[in-house]
Image (tube, rainbow, N blue to C red; front, side, top):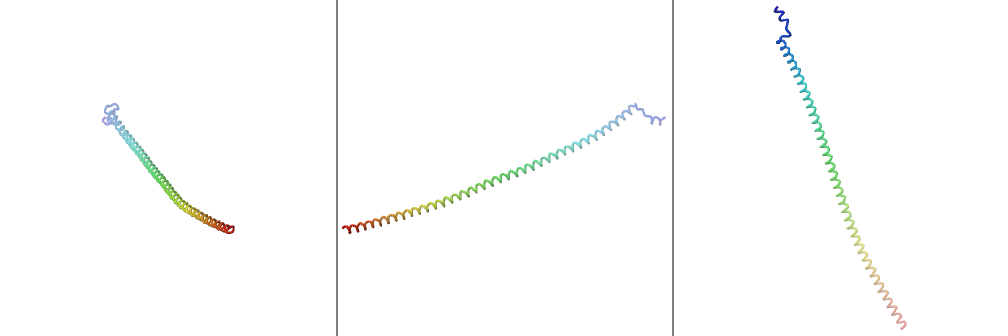
Length: 149
């Protein structure tokens, strides 16, 4: 009878029901722990993926900012170079114009001196010719007076 007693378990026995519920609760706890571990791993992976994505975006933005900074500096340098080239060109043109003015002024003064010399020479020539003509007139008058006498 004792063997029968061991084989036959009263399924309505409170101890049996408590052990069955205990086993069920332990299985539920293990399943919930496994699910929690999976959820933690999934959450950690999602967090790492989001962090990696954010870091990649930050890196790209830093690279873009650096490239834009370099481009801005290059544009600024190019503008400065163009301004400097324009200043040099203007300065060269001003120097050439001043040299041209000085040359023209010198040429004008030279032409003025030549014109004054030519005028003086023409005035002397006219005076000499006038004196010669007056002398000739005087000689002719004297000669006429001698003949008419």
